[in-house]
Length: 333
Image 1 (cartoon, rainbow, N blue to C red):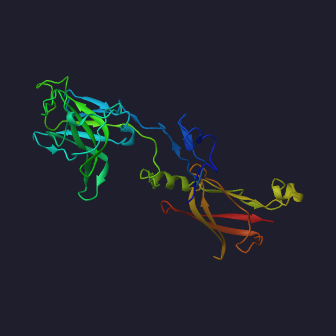
Image 2: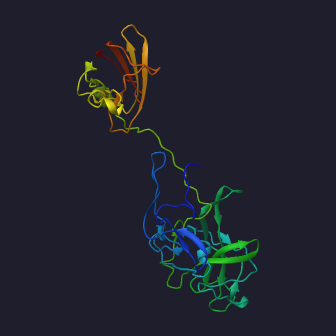
């Protein structure tokens, strides 16, 4: 775990406390931002605090028949998932499962047993596209029960209402939304292959997980890096240790280190510094921001000793492209 926010520690107003119901939630007042961690910052749009039917995201994916969707304001928020209503040419594409249980309408009022038509056969099925049935590898299917609007104990698609919900075995558990075709005619009834999406605006759930990875830029122009490496320079060259421009000389009481600067280097590279006889003096590992092509060297050996005057060689190798540059600089005392 490299980053965490909870009620004991959080940024700004990212979290808010609802004292009337005694719970914490993400602030929905606007986009929230985490602190910067590992060079990253997460931006989150909480959306809503409680589920709401998403009229903008609901509609025909394929087809344009006439159909009315009524979300259940009482029980729908308990199942705020994304659904596909898929129409077929098979009059028994789906047959209801639930036979018992209380069925409530969009306002939470239970409908009488005499008004229920259980196990209706319909030419469409409803997929819960938010979940996969692990036993089949397919989307979970929602169940249906019909409300007999004309009291004839027979399913009449153009008069009755189809309740869509989740069963618990053969028992009805809750109503997500209701479908009706009361404004539909034979000519405007959806055709086989038509798909209608029903969606909700959902808050984040405790079990939600977002996975992301950071990869190298595939559009990296190696020729540009090669061209820039040709411009690598050592400044100043030669380096004069007694130069009054050197901070270590001009401010002797501040115990400042000497600095030799490499310019135009790749953001990720390794610099080896050698004597002219090939003895390794120091290694500089560079991990700069992409726009930073500068690194300083303190003119100390790997053992922390001050280098001697003379000629030195440097070798720069890019970690990204493998391009190399060999150069030299002088140190005068």
